[in-house]
Length: 568
Image 1 (spheres, rainbow, N blue to C red):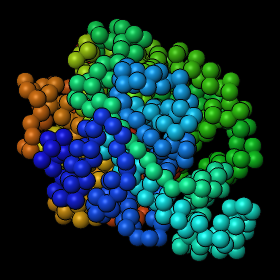
Image 2: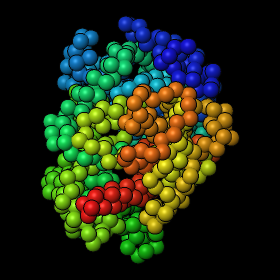
Image 3: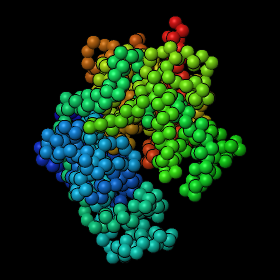
Image 4: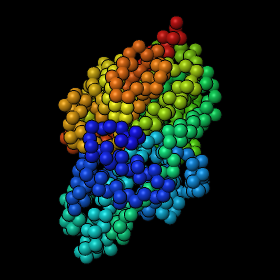
């Protein structure tokens, strides 16, 4: 077996991965069509009707939201680790091309305006993500293409009839239910008819090429990413650091408190016509009919406000407030898309922070020399590369805290899972560790969900690389938490206190670490029940509840540890 393909316990998944890794060794473009057969044979949980002649609208929506809108014109996708790789392979400075942003996946991508999409990748996990996304998208595009060749269906594209009756007729012509068509319309928004016309106009014949794929190439990309951080805050080389992998909004919102100090401004924004639903939610919160935090709602509103026309000035004002609170944002350049935020604890403003974090002795943090480094969580094995490299550059590592979205096999959307055992599909290791958090640390701040501690998690290779049988096997073994980043982080943690590389296919004891370790996940979908999915698009307001409950728990833990150090 190709050593780049970990054993998954599923012959179909392993065959699929072995096939595309062997094809991508080619120095020429690989046709995605050559992967369609092994993709459909896999029986992916996200693409269960791949072989059916009728469209699998869920797979089409899922894949289209994780690819940039220019994918309708793209014929060739090129994967590279850094700007230098693209230049060396003859593509020039792709960063001068048009930025191409997907709605539901962070990946630096650029479109040449014609037919080529250049994507920056951070690890092999990006390959395990991109190849199935492109294959599923092409399969479902071409199904719809053939159905849209019918005369009656085609007439709708020339003169769209957006009545219930018209959409019902169109849905029947596409061999799908009316509610599925409406889901597509909601997902694609104003681009719905443009997308359908593009699908009708031509078959999709995508090609893909991997420019470089060695572990050294990924390490070089990580070094390029780190150099941006070291350049902005060089003192990180001598300072103690608490490493947090979460998102780009919750930690800084809680520390800066900008949204809370600009409540009146945000409420005025809610009175815009496009914010009608949000305004109703706000009124319910104020009247206490909705058991939700005022703070969480204002953070969510701020996220939308700074992206609106009215909030242009607020964007720079927020940046100034963050700077005054000791927060430095570092955007990635010339490599993969992982934002970093560096927070100097001595500059925190106790009078600004979220009230749920307030305590009498916070002013003593002014004597701390520690930095909180928060990164926007990476995909899969990029987590291992980032923590391994960053920890070798810190003055001292005092804590590692990992939070992120996960699928739950026993809970509901909005629950928080606190694992004590994590199995890794990359290394086939099972990690046992003492989690710094328990249900008691989050119980009072989680409104909608339940905290489930002492759980067992599995870090999988990719979202498409799962089957119902695969998940059932794990569920029977007591694994209820499915995600992608935790165990790659734990592989790096192993190497931070053991004198050798992480092992393969072992039970690994991580007790007795010389630094703090916490892992927390919130449930974003329920694959066993086909329940509601927070990952279908951007984070909804409902998803803010577990996100902020976890972030508050992490910051409390860091404050407690650092204040104890300052006192002693």
